[in-house]
Length: 68
Image (cartoon, rainbow, N blue to C red):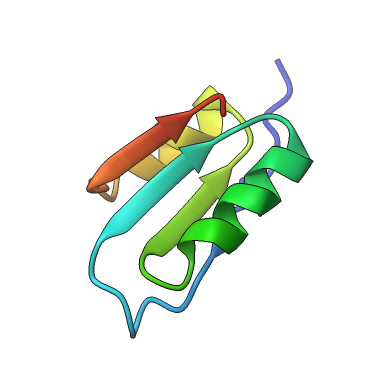
């Protein structure tokens, strides 16, 4: 099994308090969700369940959105 590099798209963590983890394998949906949410929340976007689990080992988000 090949382990892919974890690619996380984040917004500015200094200006927002609530963290939303978006898990979506369609890149267009991922970017659209990020754009819609990034003005009010810290948004972390990953493209697989594996990447989500890796992120969740270190951070507990306030909300997780799956397969938009």
